[in-house]
Image 1 (cartoon, rainbow, N blue to C red):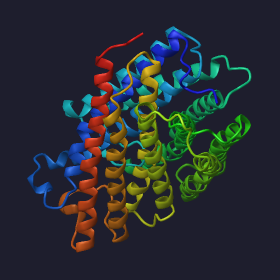
Image 2 (tube, one colour):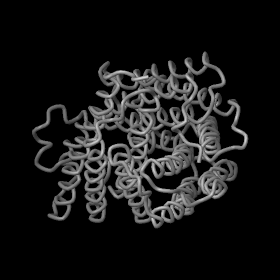
Image 3 (spheres, rainbow, N blue to C red):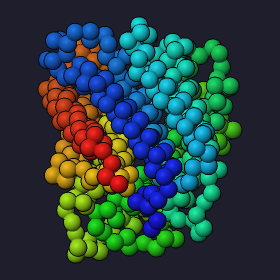
Image 4 (cartoon, rainbow, N blue to C red):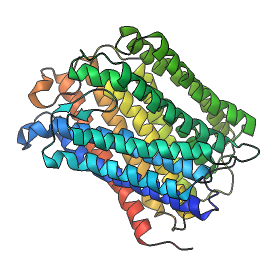
Length: 447
């Protein structure tokens, strides 16, 4: 399989490094906001936190930095690594726009912008400055996606270049569906309902792009872990294409159901649940590779970090998918589902970072902690997810903090304490990742 390790052109290296750097920057900022989010929900601790009313504002910025800025920045890094840049100038413009948009999102809470709306997918702070940050970042990503589609393709097309094109196309489609929703939303909707409807379909569609990229990441991590891919190139391309197919349904749902209708919401929820099953063929290919066992010439120093990231990514992504079928009502089972899926993708992207840094001219990340970090982050997030799922089974409501959680049963308290402990461990895992990457970059390029 042609993979991300073949970064031979200087503009590919520069673009890939730039977008990875912005993704790491977003993770640092998201981590700062996540500390307040996690500790404010731990029973017996939230009473000691000053500015507890900052919970919802911190939650908005944390979520947007993670599921929008981090994910889309790393998506752009994969697009850069998997295709020749069509225009260096426009590529730089797209990066600058996205960076400025991300900075606006981060700075908004410290300028007095508040009034958070905790809607699904991309929560917002009700202020034109925050809206401008979201749009500026989105425009930068859309330009990058368009450049990716315009870039010349390999002949023959490889699984990587196919996945890159599909992901970029789906991302553009998600933005167009956002515009469609904005143009057709009734003006009578109250604020929360407005933003819920605005991002519901486009948010679901964007997840399909992330799924395509995580499949590519798994294949590359598989090779980087010392496994032989049992599938042929054609089989890999079929598996990647199947993951992208649910995106074709999204505009059909917009056409047949008005964006504010219950049917629109219901069928996008079903698309999320059923669409995840389209990744099963890719999972089967991975299983076959595992059954064939690893190569004999295994180098733990170079392959250990990729293997740790692969195992934990698969575990969390699978847990998130299974929990998605258990959602009933509006409780913390919902964040348990998407935290599993989000962290599964994040772990894959972290593993790719370890593999890509040497190809960008840097030393290999420090092997011992690079091997341990995915396990620390993965175990912590698994505890976080299971604690939420357990508490959700007892009816603990989502998007609440402090006394508003109304934890009056021992099982609820145990579940939320488990959530808090796991969240704390996961934060340590993120910090270790950031330290490893920043130290590697600080040491400078070796080529």
